[in-house]
Image (cartoon, rainbow, N blue to C red; front, side):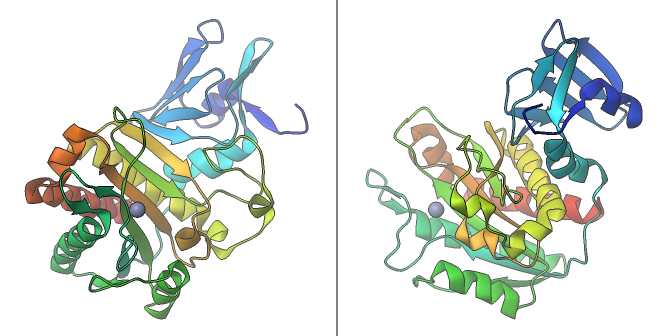
Length: 291
Ligand SMILES: [Zn+2]
């Protein structure tokens, strides 16, 4: 269809022994097994895997009497969550976003800088991971500016098995809240925020080769955090962030909430909530390793 390879969702159900609920007439199809539930809705460029929102490269379509997902979305976005096994996991590099002259987002009302809270949260995660026996490095150990390419180089220098960049977010719409996780898109696929390809989408980078593990890690983060924190699910998304795209180990960037949402900021500014986020991140890493 239009030069794109699509697969019939009913065929996937048969091939992978899922039961199926819903129909083309209802524009929603659910595939489920003892462990997994996948919900597809016509025209949506995302689906839900065990109630976690997974962004797709192309919308779900209906043609005739069948509902279709693009082959690349099945292979690159969903199969890894179902079947991928993690690699060795010993050394974890945590990347507190921003630092030094780069404040990140700010709340003038509360006098809070993102760079301070990302560092605080990374330290809390580090403490918990060390207790679990991992080797842990941070990309900065104080309030200094570290260029994005240096953060990638540090992960390589430490021979990292996993890289996690930690951020908070801000948008003009003050009603927006919740958690979102980013990983690098496959080659020739756009970021979740765009429908059309740009030149950068056609350039290979080493992070692309990590896709199956990126998806598994990203899914574990997003699903664990939204459940543990009872936060809005903004989805597992794709973006060619500089700090992710040249990585040579599985890598994700997590946005742990919005400074621009008054209620969420009230939580983020407490150490108790940041401890909850840290615990959820460590639980997600544990789930990733045990898959
Ligand atoms: Zn940030």
